[in-house]
Length: 200
Image 1 (tube, rainbow, N blue to C red):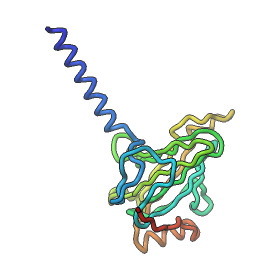
Image 2: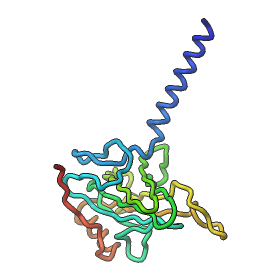
Image 3: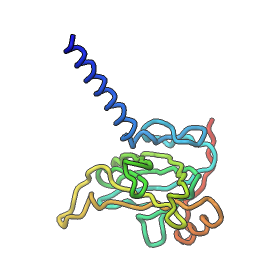
Image 4: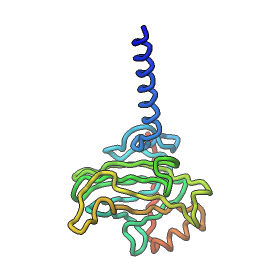
């Protein structure tokens, strides 16, 4: 009888541990889009997801060993700006090997904040939607900062650079006249297109 109790306790501990890890460390479960303009459950999508209302579009090209945004900040292809509280559709592709497009809150990583991402596989386009809603505490100045990292090992060069240094930055500015002016100035007028989506 005692063996059965110990076995039952260990089974419950294991089950609870797996559930906690699934809830806390599942960065890829927050892609997709639902009608209420909040992020829904599900892995990033292989076809352009249906979106209701206004949204921004950012094109991401992953290559050894950098992310290239379009549109991007003037003179800095690895930096882009988006408006807060207006969903962003990321179209992610790879030009060479498999990469991971992984976004997280600066300095927070897995302990706080949020993370989301999508794989970038050569020959395919993946779509992921995120509605950046930073709190006032997230703004380091006129913008909030989000780091992009490659979450899939993609090789190194003979000089030691490569996958560990593959990163980029997303600046999120308030969705008001001040934020729009800052974004336009930083991106030399080449801001992300804002489209209107409808769900059928």
